[in-house]
Length: 385
Image 1 (cartoon, rainbow, N blue to C red):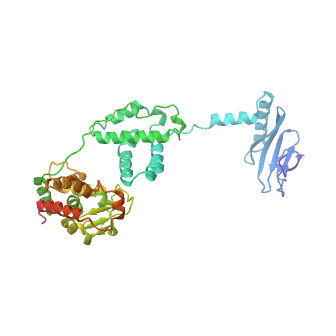
Image 2 (image 1 turned 30 degrees about the vertical axis):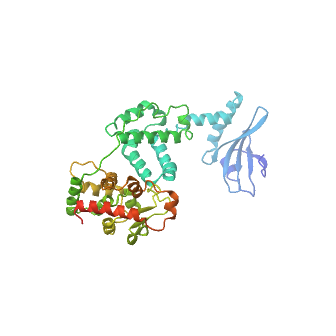
């Protein structure tokens, strides 16, 4: 008996008699003459539920059959007869019913790579990775991985399947390597979270990386002059930002995350707080006079895609020089002018000591002079001086 339940009474099994059953202050059950084991349970809120009480082995059990009147008297009797057969044949009706429901329940759809990849991106990439990495992984997922593999069940993803996919990316070896690394990272993250991957092989197992040739591109003086001519006739709204990168030697992240409070033009400096996303711990940038002069025309809230478009609009015809190659050009011009590699490296933020960066409250005169010399030389080639 359920705690708080009244002892069951017995009535004839008719709809008229059932309609006489009214809610009480506590749950109660009624049995039915000529139908041993069948009860109707009535809650204080008036909900009526058919109950089958039976003994199996040494224990007594109760099994709900559904609500009245959704299941009428005839349906309750038919269900009762089936359950009694189970008991007679030595089967626990509760176990038999659970097995039947399992056979009738449609199997759950398989987990796909798309579901896993989206969880990985939301729970790992967005939490642990820098904004630039987030953008790159989002692009790889949307453009390449999900269209090709997204609808595959986890069990259907094997090293040969992934290898065939990566073969289609062979014409862009650097991208192929980055995509392979991302697929491997998704697998490593997912394996302890999905039983479907138990005993599986790592998706990129045995896959060889493509050989990457490091870019060593820089603009020649003739090409810088061509850029200057294209810049003066360009109408692209971000053309000034692209030229500013060439004049300052900054990585593109400085433009992408820059805000008014980072700019100190009177001191020829940019200053950033510690751990600014996308700057790789860069704290200060020394600017030459030409780059300071152009600084007001470099907008805020710039996107990487639009900045790349701006550079493409003024880049010399046939040149594959990237935005990052502008930084390399700045450094190369500095060395060509006789400035020491150590000073050039310091201008690029490569060799700055963390303590000096943290406590620096004034500009470094040596770096300002070097920045001004390099920037002025490039400005002259561009025809801006």
